[in-house]
Image (cartoon, rainbow, N blue to C red; front, top):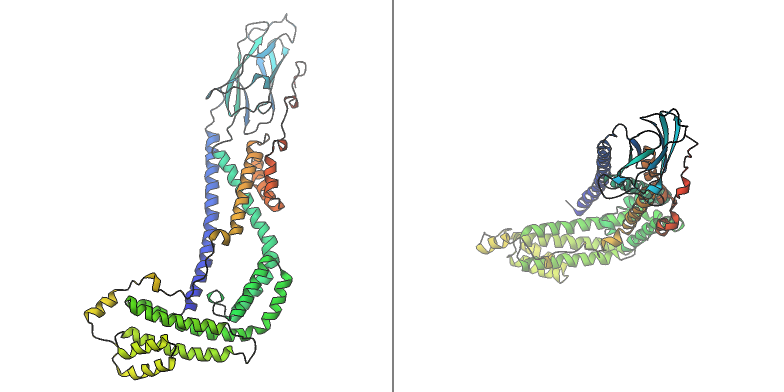
Length: 490
């Protein structure tokens, strides 16, 4: 099997592996998001119920000011006392049941309105955000009723659900998903869609000329032109790409003829390389055959550098001559690998190293009467057992200058970095520092859509980071809470 078939298998494997990596990424992301969602539900189910007789103000994930009203019965009604004589006040700062944190009393406003002689309407306004953000927790306090009668304190419970932990990871995953989706949509609409016709045109041109081995099987000038064409398409230079297409497309039939002939030579070299690696020669004999293959490859490179555009271009007779030399080299190498100690074949191999193909052909013809294989001597057995050849003698005919992976995937790295920055900024500004985030479905959807919108809007990272500045956060002052008056029960 020639290198062409191996290359096709490699390209198919790369495409399949890329699709598998994308599917794995999507599956892992969905699985992680689902796990965070289940943990979020578990946190919601773990919340203890509110005891009876307790005035509870539950905020959930929201930190917006809230007002609650509750009717409290009086133990000893006084019919002789006028309405409004019952006063309500907070005994002290509510204390967290799990830590030493306290809810500042100045952020709680309590008012009582005695509607009847046996009941009082309590109105409680609570602001957990301003002027001091209160940590999450369950805060317990007491409301003291002063006035006629002996009324016990009324328990007060303020519940602030924790935004940290798994909920923060769930918010980050939604922001990251939205940012990545925004990058994908932006990439498709701005990069792929306008360049799709040129990409298909380039693929058709490569297929027509028999593009293989990353272009190393076509003439050098043609490979440089096609690489320049691919670079123009990547840069979005549609005018330059169209001009280059106009130059190359009329020549694709002649280019296909040249590349098919060069492919045949490459296949012969590959057969020699496969046979050499499987022969198990010692280091010296391996280096001799290696030198022959490298000489053939250098001649092939010289042929590829010739002019090919015209019908009478010098590349065509040069290819025919090289094919004959490669056939002679293949015969000599095959015979030498079968019997490395045969004198004629050793001399023919030396002639190939000197570039004397006619002499090598003559020696090969004279040696055809010699047995192909020698008896199994101890030296021969040792030589065949020594199949591991030092890397210094291995062929590097297809070696290319390597590029560091961070330069090769610079755009992918930049996209991931942008998504991470958007995720962190959104986590702080749209989740942790967002007073109105309530944990409802619309709030969670807003996170993903925010990341999507930021990436689609095309703002720079500096613009995103500017959202972290203190001036960009809208603070709610204590005066923004509507305090109920004693005369207004609503």
